[in-house]
Length: 65
Image 1 (cartoon, rainbow, N blue to C red):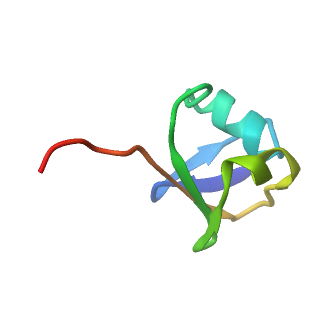
Image 2: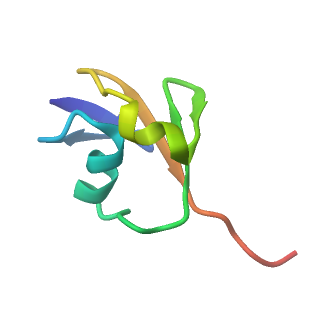
């Protein structure tokens, strides 16, 4: 399935958001996620299903100021 990840097209084998994050190399990382412009909490990722053409944003918190 092809989706956009942070604006870049990516082909994924996984359709479950939690497993897709692992496939993308974010497994275990502290990140915020948004699917098609809507925030997805960490608790909801296991039950969130991705579809062809979805837009996924993955953001890591930054320190500093």
